[in-house]
Image 1 (cartoon, rainbow, N blue to C red):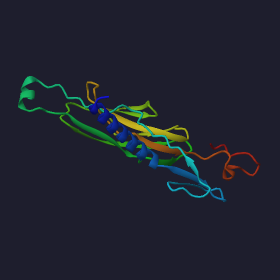
Image 2: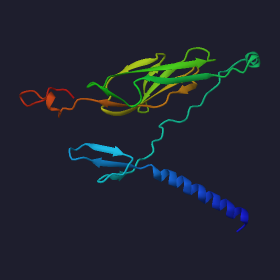
Image 3: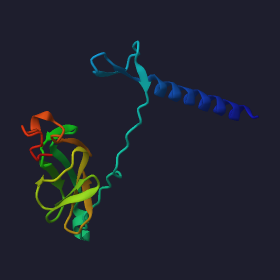
Image 4: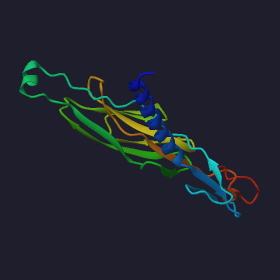
Length: 193
């Protein structure tokens, strides 16, 4: 084997060992106390079990910015670059929303520069279009309990995508029919979900 290849192989082996060592350092342990409380920690404790954490990846492709069409005169005056961004301002990332009917208000803020005409938005809830139009907020209803992912995308008048927000994760909580507080005196439920 040539000296260059041996050196290259040695360097690649060393780098891969460093990467494996860095990944293996991050551990999470789960411990259940006598009263049933569950504790998660990064430090090993007596009676704690090691759990594996999977890396979460985005559900959406990276944002690609587009440039508006300009005439030759406008392009020669200055290279006008489209600058656009949109972000969800309400609810906050990883917020817990408590509503038995699954209602929630979503609001977003945009910043645009060098875009001709009006912009419009699409709100995606769990990768499905929940709203499409010019408003910067919407009220949703009928969300099921559990985790939901929200994202807003902004478009120009020609339908080209200008920007995407980061994905916001929310947790919808609803009262359970098994909650004793909802039961009436006759032993039935009050009809709430």
